[in-house]
Length: 222
Image (cartoon, rainbow, N blue to C red; front, side, top):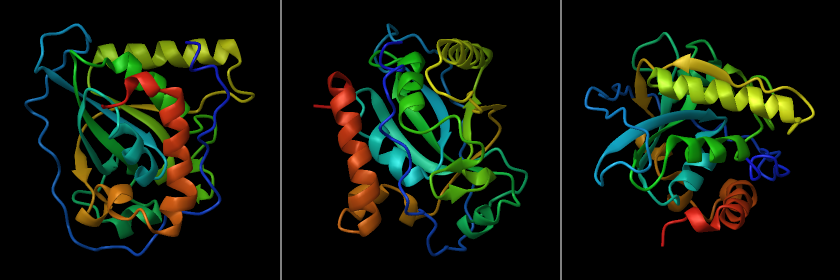
């Protein structure tokens, strides 16, 4: 818990991540083969899924890609009521979806608890439907839980963090059951690594990545 209580250095910058929309339709991700094991001492090769909304997915995709035990990070949309949404539709806030990450991880190398610890530190969980200059329900802080164990752990963390006074304001992170995940358009995937020379990547994403690397040095891929 000590790391969770450190001052947050990862709040969203002043530049919005809203960009030109691609109207290509996308299909939902099939999660029928998801392994619900969340114990980090599990046998090698077993994977589980965490789905987090932390505001703009460009920023935190770059962060979780670096974590040892994370097999795959996909940027996308979840929690809405429209099938096959596009980025343009998401941007209106009318579909109910949140920008989020679908994180596949090796349970023998990292646990859901450890990913949650990172989740709390890479965004501000006390600002309702907002991260920095990005405003709207699509930028809400949210955990889409895949089973009751994940739900119970998130509820416990929220209660403990609020009680500890880690932030001046109460946590407003939404806890929602996972239903469908729609991968975002191709140009959103691996965004930071593919666009490191762009201003947003240089001035907003890179500082967050560098701060994360300092705090979670022992958790990074080698």
